[in-house]
Amino acid sequence: MDPQSPEAAITGWLAAQQDAMIALLREMVDIDSGSYDKPGTDAVGAVAERFLSAHGIPVERLPQSRHGDCLRATVPVPEPSNAGGNIVLMGHRDTVFPAGEASRRPFTIRDGRAYGPGVADMKAGLVMNCFVLAAFARFGGGPAPLVGLFTGDEEIGSPEGRAVIEEEARHARAVFNSEPGRPTGNVVTGRKGGVFMLMRVAGKAAHSGGNFQEGISAIGELAQKIIAIHALTDPGRGITLNVGLVSGGQSVNTVAPWAEGQIDLRYVAPADRDDVMARIGAIVERAYVPGTEAELVIKGEFVPLAQSDAARRLFDLYVDSAAASGLHVEGEFTGGCADSGFTAGVGTPTICAVGPVGGKAHTADEFLQLDSLVPRAQSCARAILNLRRAGL
Image: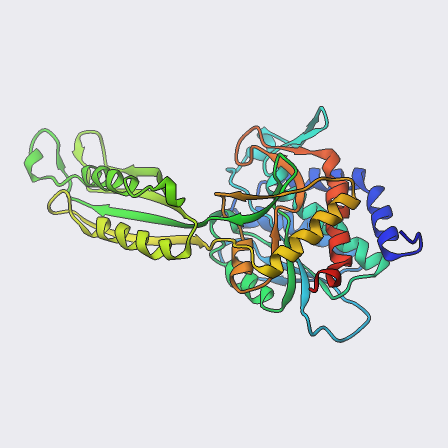
């Protein structure tokens, strides 16, 4: 490698940034940013914006009404032409954890691993994106303008962020989604689609002792619907149904006038989505307990991530770039959903889970391998620098 090349300059600078990366990661992790905590999610965005601005990178804020605003950072290139589109580095700032989690479990380091809410999923990916953007802003070499997209509602299906993500992807030549690298060190080349739904059931209240016969139990109806919905699971086709949250009722001595359950559907084949949704709709419409009524509301939705021919070339390029950074990387399929499905869905070559390596996301044991921060950043930078080699 030419010691005067942008690749040498960028990867060399990144090699010296681990302590700075950890400091920025600590600051982000120690801020609560649940998907419904707009102030907290925007506070994490402010940390990223301050870092990027300090490196001369302009940041545009795209306001969102219910969830964290979307941030769009841009690193231009000297040539004004960009017929092939931008190169997008993408990540989300929201986590699944409740208010107060950051103070209960602040950022800590033990035995080469960092812990804390969202440390891997995906605040480390945000940090990596910030430093990769800063490196290109400092040394140049990008084959096209780089865009850093920082969204705020991925964990609930990106109800506001999806439109921003898809619009950005339509003008991109490649997307790197910095979800955490798998515990194996692999990246993700395929994901399931998912639909998150709320099922509401209405019944009729009555005293459970004095006039029981006048009541119509919404909880009884919900229980029957849950059994029927779970029976739609078909592991052989990659279809799973899970009612993960339930609530309802007025008091223990009242026939329940209302109940609701939240449904998680995962699928692989796009055609299965409509088939299963129609079956769920029929279950919701049917009254197992006479006199009850129900409705179904879609709260959020992901589309599957499938690997196109162009995405395969991007993956092969990333594998080579990772090898040059001292890493062995393969591709994996996962049942988890991500925003990468939206970018792939509009036809943009996409690779997912290129962020630093971590595991046990969404739990109190979530961890990040600190020694992966620098080489994963270098791998991403090398892939960007060599995009033309993959015909992208």
